[in-house]
Length: 396
Picture 1 (cartoon, rainbow, N blue to C red):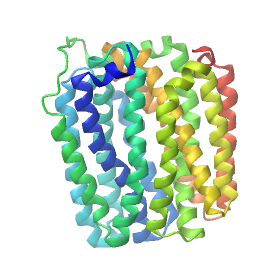
Picture 2 (cartoon, one colour):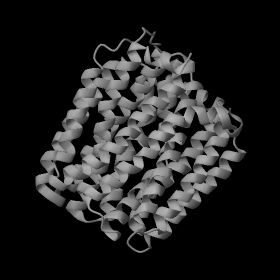
Picture 3 (cartoon, one colour):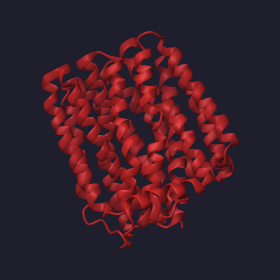
Picture 4 (tube, rainbow, N blue to C red):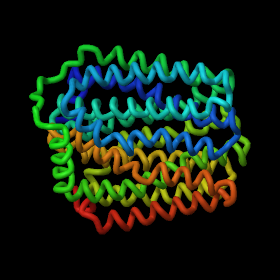
């Protein structure tokens, strides 16, 4: 089936438009929240702690959410999850008036909000698997990733401008965009599927067995543990470096990240073609080498043009890696297990991130940020070596 046949699919078009709204909301929120905390606390530790807390639902609950997602109406619960996120953002708007004193409440609402975010993500993965044939899974993943990256271009610019005007606008816009996303998911045409009536824990154990038997995906999951542990630190520490050391304002930061997001859009559009040419394993090695070089530039350069180039190239490589990883997970997993496998691997993917974020936030007070970012570049190089000796290297 060709790429145009993807756009003739009514269900995918509806899901795509919903993803547009959701991606706009999440991209604005993801830059707005760390900057809001910076304005309230002027602390790198608070920023990294918030990012770590946002990852905890993925780490602690994703494997259980995945089992549940295989037993529910995914379309309905995706809408409910988005609605819950909107309510929690409204609570965070109210908390802004209390300033730094409300920091514990920001942490609590962020934990619940990201739990709902992950429920939505797993439901969406399941809906894609249900509605599309296997040849369209990688192109669909690529197109949805391009949407996310398109708003990685627009979202930061919007967030920076909104925060420079009024802090609460960085939350109001995501709320409106997500309400639109939930509305577009109504009456989504999904094929009827048979829900197996086996026990919850039996389903959970079966998910582990299916994952371990898929050797390339099993090896890939452990590689992503290392990669994500590095990526999460890079995202937060460079944001802090840009704001605190380079003295870039919210508007300048938004523009910088927005322009850099063009690289991610290009990566999403070219990923399928590059995978066909190089194969999955080799392509992952190349993009990790690119990311490592970019992180070194982010660590040591003070030149805005160089930083912009590094951010754009890093976004290009990161999107290629994400599309390959998510696409292969979709391709190699039967629809009956997609929720469980998404949940289990999702928990594994974030295994190191909370610890590395908290550790780096503490070390940032005593060590130069350039040293910490360079250590992250070294972690990417270790992942390159791991990819070369793993089963994923031989996947076409």
